[in-house]
Image 1 (tube, rainbow, N blue to C red):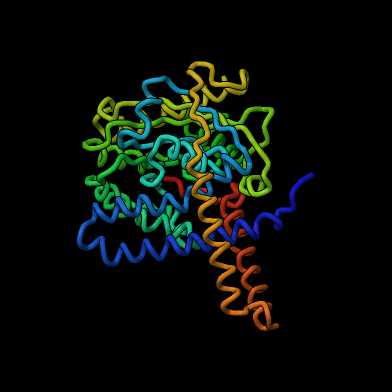
Image 2: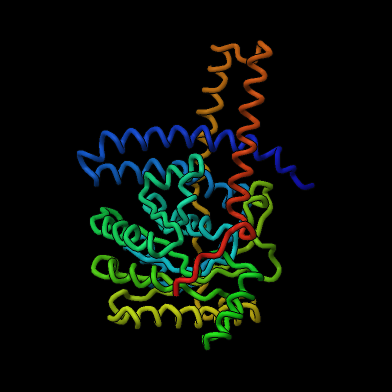
Length: 369
């Protein structure tokens, strides 16, 4: 029997937002008092603290919904993941690609130092957006005239990052939908570009900027291709909260950053060629329902997220009981009304998070080829 969405959203939302506000307060305190004294110490503390929050979403994927994320890559790349700085370039296939990336980063041991280039409105999301801001995510406005300087400064700040990090860059600029694919096909046909079938046309300015600024200190590009098998429904945040499983296939190919071309035009062409190859790879996946050209790696299902969520749940439940006993909040109509309003706010915030993740609600970026 399907679980009503509200029945799980409210308790999960309470756990996530209460623990999230605690994490945000710790992050803000360290940002004010620790970062001015030692940026590296701040980053190490923040890496640990942010992971305590993000593991809750990893737990939903791994343990609540039981999503199967199958990784296809060569053994050498699999062993290297999490041990080096990397620029991660992926297609944007599902509503939760970012969360799939978090799960892979957690299994590789670098979840707390995972970063991404995201649209500016993301940082306004309560708890999760604020946590990303404290963690040095790069937020852009999707206007190159405004974003060029922001991106360059953000990339330059990562040069002295003390721990292995992944920086995710979705070069398609928006999440994949059939309507956006049709627009990309029309654009490609009118400009003489290869007409895509499974991906959108990459916007290369951000990628070129990332390569030019990171080449000296980031050794690798992880070219990730995400696909959903025919037998699996696409994963969404709503399905996750309902505990409904899906299967996600992830193909990873590692490229040495130093092997990329030197000129900006050639780097841009490299990116376009990579997406043409990615398109062909997805054609093959459609036919075979697997990425058979690489080994299926067993990344397991680590217990860490389960342990962290259990500790959060016990701590917050016991704390809430003590607070209710101390305040007698539920003994008056005003207290009951206040609690009902709080639960309503939590429900609304969870709905905002779900709607924000939906690809149909994402807007295409401006043309920045």
